[in-house]
Length: 292
Figure 1 (tube, rainbow, N blue to C red):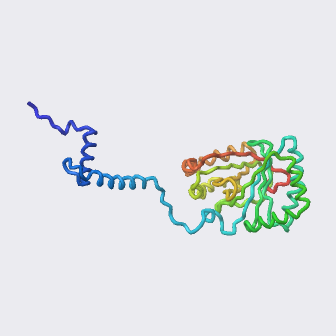
Figure 2 (cartoon, rainbow, N blue to C red; figure 1 turned 120 degrees about the vertical axis):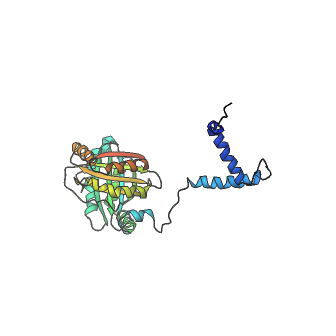
Figure 3 (cartoon, rainbow, N blue to C red; figure 1 turned 60 degrees about the vertical axis):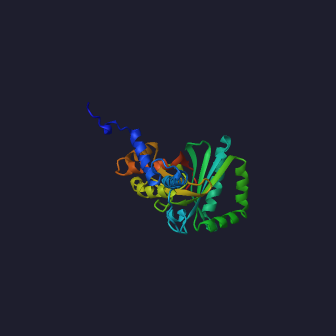
């Protein structure tokens, strides 16, 4: 009779039993002595649960500063306000004319520490919409000063009253600018502008900034980068990238060219999982816009 090698009959289940038998030995349970099972097994489970949970706990490095200070140029960075006005379709022309008569007067008056960065109508995306962006040099104190002074401006209050009759809804956000982006400055046209808005997963803003600090170098070759911002008040963890192109064909060519640069594909690969939702608007500047 041929003696069978029992090692050849070992199955995964057999190995599994052996592993657990070894665990029981380490707990002090020998040959069926179950008197210590309750206490020892409970302690062991506690240790295993703690180890298992540690795999999913994200350790946070202690920081002495807010994330916004790590991403902006300095503690006195400019504050930006972006406004989205949804206009009644039949009132769009009158609304544009009203804005062109009123907004430049605030922009040009040194009494107000603010500047009109740009003002647009949405061409593709949400229709019958106007987008305005203001810059407040000096941050929140400048914003407070402007708002206080405008409440004393009778012409502006009349503008607000007339504007209210033309709107379906409106919303705004307060933004800071990324340190590695260009500061928006007036430019000659004609251009179209793309506002790409990203709703990020909470807690990923620093990671986004780290990747885009490198990525922005791939998107400067045609001077298309206008500004990059992240929200402070309004929808949080929101990022806005503003781009300028000569036309839609130039936009397509410029975006395709980015893929020819080594490293761009890696940036896209690692930043897409950070996004919960994204949106794109193609916008046409109004006559009064410093960004043409």
